Length: 488
Image: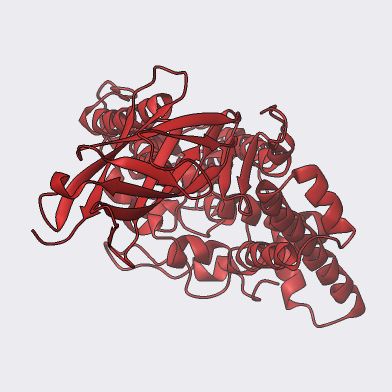
């Protein structure tokens, strides 16, 4: 459970001039529940993400007989990844690099437009920490009750409530681990195997690792992950500019702050009544009144809290707002507010990079070959001189058939006049070989090339294998390799 410390006592320390106080010197934030627009947005975001996380693996997609019918699947045993109609092979790992680039650029664009919207609403750490904190609130009570609960001496009642909280965390964490595991196998079969203890040991280890991290990070580390462990919090400010939407406090309007006046008159003073509601609802325990801070995840709950206080005293909302520095400055100076400016140099740059990377990946997917070839020259021996004076070289020739139908290929050579082909277990001394490859498989062939000695220029000669699909007019696949021979 949380360390026994009252966050109100922490915020009593007065910072020196110009200092932004560190979010928390020890203990954890104990956030108060709040209702409002941003709280509702967090509920919706969490609900959609958790639903996708746990149910997305059950989506089906028909790929034909003998193929997995799970829409999104990372098949480690089959060394394949499936995304609806797209099938990714191990040698196409560059698509993963492309996806990582798209994710990074999207994060930069998201930050330039709306600040730390990822951290506040979409990050898994935020989602599970928020869920765990609300479980504490539902079982133990609101913020004051939870602080009091921490300070109570050990008792049977306290132990029962602690067990209920930790047990709920454990169940959710196990569900998180299972949810991740289902993306790596047929979800329906794997779910049954997990609960009947028929799943492989690796599956339970994986569930334990993922679920364990969820339990520790969401239940105990909480905001420390955002501040100490996550690298994004360290450089996210570099993604902002004066038009980025961030959570901000209008000091020109709120200061000088003072307790709420009994006569509810605010002449000669700021609108901030120093109620600390903005601090109490913050999941990371920051005081937004000190300005933009490393620990602020941009969730906007302080806006919901402050707006309720402003309503209570009949004051305009927006003392804490989700707005840009340009708009805040304009309001402070009494000038017209420019409004949101989504199209600008920074966003055009990120958007352009996103379009380029996405376009390259899409073009690659649409134009990629369904056949790949790998040629390996045998080294022991490099060549053999035959009794008729010709020279033989051996090769391991692999053909990857990336479609779900049997195919037949024709192989011939270029570059050496009079060369003939031989295949172990097949035809010999022919100009062309027929190579059958089963659907969605790699065909391995051991091939010998015999060339007349007069066709060789020396120890190293260029040889080109030419592969075409039988009966099709597709582009031939040429593979340049070495043909070794004796010294001239």
